[in-house]
Image 1 (cartoon, rainbow, N blue to C red):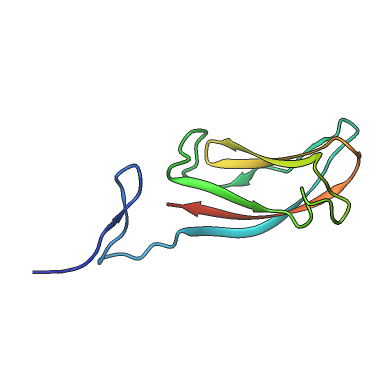
Image 2: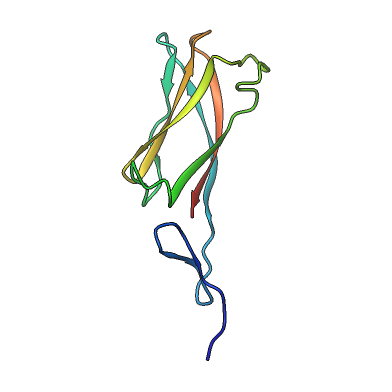
Length: 113
C-alpha cells in the first residue's frame, strides 16, 4: 500500500503526486516592447505550449514592470501592459497615452497550475 498526497488543479488534473514532480513555474524571462506612434506596441509571440485563449484556470502569465502605474521611472497611470493569449502562445501589448516610441522591459513568469 502506498501513501502520499495528490494535488489537483481547477480542471481536475493531477499536478503533483507521489509518482511525479511538476514545477508550477514553466518559464521566467523578459522582453522589451516599444510603443509606436499609435501609443501601442506589441511583443513578438512567446511560446507557451498548452495555453489557449480561455484556460486561465490552468495556464497563466504574471507580469512585473518596474515603475509602471507608480509614476516612477517615466511611467505612470496612463501606462499598462495587456497579456494577449492565443493557442500555445501569448504576446504583450504595451499601451501609453502620454508618450510614443518608448521602450518598456516586461519581466514575466509563466505558470501552470
